[in-house]
Picture 1 (cartoon, one colour):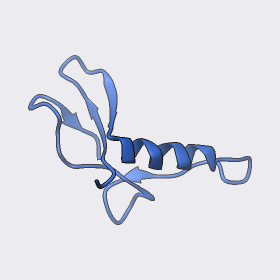
Picture 2 (cartoon, one colour):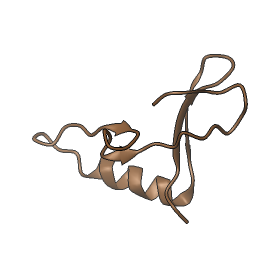
Picture 3 (spheres, helix red, strand yellow):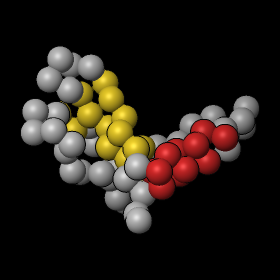
Length: 66
């Protein structure tokens, strides 16, 4: 299955990150690769982010952060 990472604000305005198992693996790999000289990566839609985020909501009232 393709990696899926969804970043959103829920109806209460709370920040959420939703991950399927493949998306979790991608995010953990990127986080583990951080160091003093490699201190960030970009989450975003193609072609901007090194880590791709999904444009599909889990709930109809979620506000996607892309």
